[in-house]
Length: 387
Ligand code: UDP
Image (cartoon, rainbow, N blue to C red):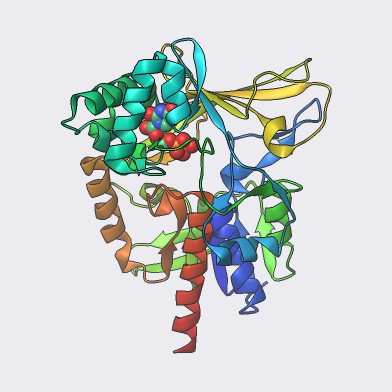
C-alpha cells in the first residue's frame, strides 16, 4: 500500500488524526501501535469475571466543548455519568473537591458554620478556589481552613502522586481539584459528562474502522520508520517517505543523545470481589497513610450489572521502562520543561514530523483536550494542504 501519512500511536490523539486524514482527505494512513491493543491508556476490556474495567485506571470523559462531544458521538453512544469522589480524611469519607459539606463533616458544627461564612463572604457562593490560593489568605479563619485542607487532602497525596510537594510543581496541577464554595459534589462541572456506552476501546475501534486506515498492532515505530538525521528526512521501510508523520509517543525517545524526560507512572492492582459493591462511589481517594492514592470501582461508572465487582488500586511511582511501566504524566518542573523544549528544538529539522498529544507535547491533556488538540492539528494540516 502507498501511504500518504504515518501515525505512531493508536491512542485518542493518533486515532483522531488517522480518522480525519482517512475520512476527510481520503488519505491512506499507516497507523503503528507498539502495544497489542488500540485506544492507548483509555483502553478498556472485560476482566476474567466479565466486568468492564479500564486497564490503565479510571477514564472519565467530560467536556465543555460541544464540537468535541459531537465529533466523538459519531463513533459511540453514551452512558450518562457524573463522576463523584470521596476522600478518606481522619477516618471518614468526605466529598472531594472539598466543599461546604466536607467542611461540615470535618469540623464541629459551630466551627464549620464560622468557616463557611468566612469562605462565602470572601469568595462568593459557587466559587472554586485553588488550594494554593486559599493558603495565601491573611484572614486567620480562612488560613486555618486552608491549612487543614492542604495538610489532610493535598500535601501527602501530591507527594505520593508526583514525588514532590504541591509547591514544587505547576500550581495548575492542584488547581484541577479546587476548594468549592457550594454543595456541588461533582468532580467535574462540564456540561457534557458521560462514558462511551460500549466502552472506549469500542469507540476508538469505530474511529479506526475505515478502509483507508491500516492499523498494525505490536509494531514499534523503529521497526518501520527511521529518522534520517543527516538529511532531515523520514524513511519508511528504508525508503524516503514524504508525507506527514504524526507522532504521539514520548518525544525524548526520538532524540538520540539528549537527556531522558521524566514522567510519573502508576502501578495498577486490579482485583475482582465476590460481592455486589465495594465502596459507595466510583473513586475513593486515600490522601495520607496508604501507599496507594485511590481505589476505583468500575461498575459505578459503567452502570454494568454483575453479581461481583471489580476494583483497582493506583500506586504512583517514577517511570522506568525496565519495570514494564507506562509513562502517564509529564512532569511540571522547570527542568523537565526545559529539557522538553531542547528535545523539540533538536527535532525541528524534521519538517514532516508532527508531535501530538499528552506524551509528544509533554502536556497534561484531559481526554477532551487531546481530542480538541488533535482536531485543531488536523485543521492546520488541511489549511496547509489547501494553500
Ligand atoms: N490532588 C490531591 N489530593 C486529592 C486529589 C488530587 O492533592 O485527593 C492533587 C494531586 O496533586 C493531583 C492533582 O490534584 O495530581 C490533580 O488531581 P486529578 O484528580 O485531576 O488527577 P488525575 O485524575 O489526572 O490523576
